[in-house]
Length: 184
Image 1 (cartoon, one colour):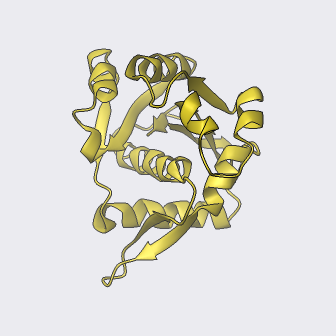
Image 2 (cartoon, rainbow, N blue to C red):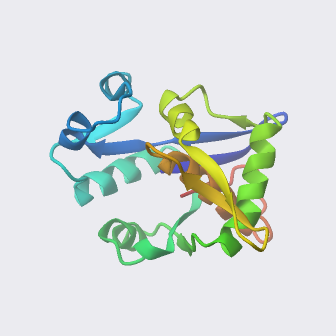
């Protein structure tokens, strides 16, 4: 889950990720990164078990977004009936589905790539996000559209960042406010 803060400071947009995972799955993972350190340092929130408990995910997200003026969130279209998404909607959070196909991902991915290459993304040296970026590549369709793809490890934070940027760009035409924050 990633919050996007446009115009955080001169020439910079900020992203603030919320990573959460089941502790048993992390401990049994064959991925060789510093999961335990990232948990101890507060970069990953964990719940007991092998899968993320929906109540844990919902409560963690609600607590996180309550600290900010969140306008709306974007989510993967395939998750529209997921318990956590439905609970967020019932709690009054405006949630918008976004397809993961090339056509709908191309514009926000190009915008993300431009901001990232231009040094216009502040991620506060989040080590989990840095690692996820190393697991990401740009894939191109035969029509020239692009989207992010995973190339080993996990890249959910990068995908979420692109979704948050897409959400921000889509609401800009009808809600202009320096405090608008978009999230996926």
